[in-house]
Image 1 (cartoon, rainbow, N blue to C red):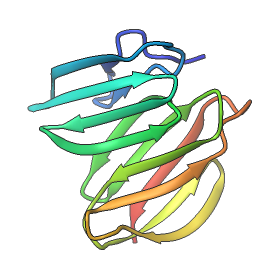
Image 2: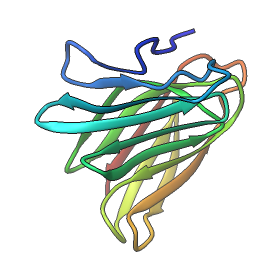
Image 3: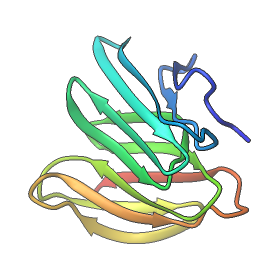
Image 4: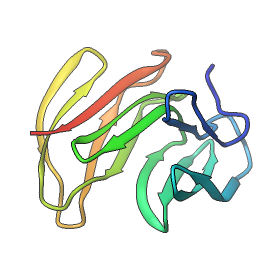
Length: 137
């Protein structure tokens, strides 16, 4: 299992890893500096949430562990792991179309809502780490 024991950590490649889906009690880390931004993470078995500079970035129900989370103008990519299938919500650009790949499968194009949120389901039960890539179309 690839849980993030410190709740949020920078990686050598400039990405971040966060979340611990094995915790039975809520844990949070606030004001974590990385790349000129301040991050906040809340995580435990039933939910993982990440904010950057007070703005929504990521949420999963139930909780997940996220590795090598990278975001840029074109979208986001990361590895996700959890004990059960999860509903992920990712904060992106408002009312924009994205190409979504989960694992090796191209899920197709999905559009964010007016708040910039994109929701997707990821089958995690027994899958180990699953790669997710969301790219602007």
